[in-house]
Amino acid sequence: MQKALQYPGTSRVDHQLIAEMVEPGSRVLDVGCGDGALLQLLAETKNTDGRGVELSREKVNACVMRGLSVIQGDADRDLADYPDQAFDYAILSLTIQATRQPKTVLENLLRIGHRAIVSFPNFGHWRIRTELLLTGRMPRTRNLPEPWYTTADAHLCTIKDFVDLVALIDAEVEQAVAFNTSGQRLPIRKSISLQNLLGEKAVFLLRKRGAG
Amino acid sequence: MSVPPNFANTDTGSGSCQRLTEANNPSSKVLRLPQDQPLRLACDQLLAPISIAYETYGELNADKSNAILVCHALTGDQYVASEHPVTKKPGWWSTLVGPGKPVDTNRYFVICSNILGGCMGSTGPASIDPATGKPYGLNFPVITIGDMVNAQVRLIDHFGIDQLFSVVGGSMGGMQVLEWAASHSERVFSAVPIATAPRHSSQNIAFHEVGRQAVMADPDWCGGDYHSHGKVPRNGLSVARMAAHITYLSEDALHHKFGRNLQNRSQLTFSFNADFQVESYLRHQGSTFVDRFDANSYLYITRAMDYFDLGASRGDVLANAFRGTKTRFCVVSFTSDWLYPTRESRAIVHALNAVAANVSFVEIDSDKGHDAFLLKEPEFFATIHGFLSSAGVKRGLKV
Image (cartoon, rainbow over all chains, first blue to last red; front, side, top):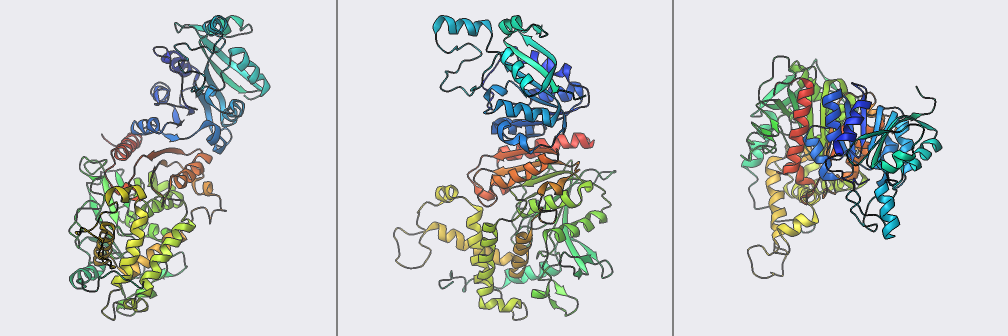
């Protein structure tokens, strides 16, 4: 659950979108909250009642010193503790690819939260495809700097893969947006092939099928 | 105990005498609850009259919203941030509590009371039993952490405080924090249980039993009636303290501090004298402890800790203790604490998560063992400061 991916200069665009998705005054659980930047943004702009879970002890301590309610924990292990529908939103930002059981984690998010917001790096991005095609080796881009044998990102996926998983666990997409390398939004609707090619990362707002 | 440390020649006079004075006429403030306001204890006995000795620091604000109750550990007392009347040492948490400190007495009104069963002025086994005119000794009822907290509730009532801004404590103090949060949650805005556990482990009960048996094996204990015989079970209580003190440290801390260094000598003496520095250190810890602490209090308080099990009376589900809580929690543990290891704090956090409580949890990296909570650990202090400051904003306290 280590937040291995960094997107310098563009980290705010997905936070900004998530802040737009979240209703004011709602209860939010940010899993893999890092230094708490998103929790802080949501508290300041949407007056949320926020909690965080973060693996790195240093980052947890930094969050608590800033007055955020954050515990040291692990998405794979600790989400099972939370009761059903305890939060309005359960957020997993740029973390799902580093979990051991992405499907279970996603199911837990949709159990704990009325809605889940998940962002992830898109392995279908054209640069990654090109690098694999041309070099024949695992892509290492500015966003994926680690070699395959040290990266925590064991479960990378494409936007199409993610949409399949959402269908598999009987969830539905309320809103989905991809971001290109410049941070521009590419809304994801019926056809996703272009977004899957141009999107460097994506943000999905999900809910259980049939839920209000 | 075939080889007791050599305390027999040390002074048994002034320290013990002053300690007895503090037990019945403490230097601190005292709340006296009369005979007609008894405390119903967990053992179903009524205890009265009751004295609660306490100290306060800072000013209570007009709407009484800035009060922090600090709960002390097994051998602590009400002198959290002021000089101890017997040892003349600074307050046991004066690094954390004071003007401009993480628990800032310029901002908060800090209350610290000697626990029920203690020996620094609150009613305990060294207090005079009004029925006999002699110290209670073993006639004192066995008390629990819940009983200690119920006595503190009387003190908070006395101040007219509806809701404490925070309850803060480490080790047994942390047990009191949890008890407050579980049994009086509406009166606790925020809670900071530090280096503690939701129930006392088998290993910790075992250590306490060793300590109690050391005290009771000392002939000077006199079946608990040593006051009447003008004696003090010095050897027994010293050994209890020495054994306990080891559990407060860590192997690394002991190794770094003492190694196998010899005490004021260049070679082994082939005797049972304190050849090693670590032996000398422990003997010192033991003997100074006897001067300030009552042996029967040690028995009663360790028993109260052994009996502590927050989930037991709640269907054995710890989460039931916190159901519906609005209290904001900050749980803290230390990496090298093997007496109250991080997994105990994690059990508290899991229970709080299970009821979707507002909880922060920080594990502080330290090699100082359980004692770390009493020491100046910058990361720990920053955590306490950050948590209380943000809780203060939520509580509407002026910055």
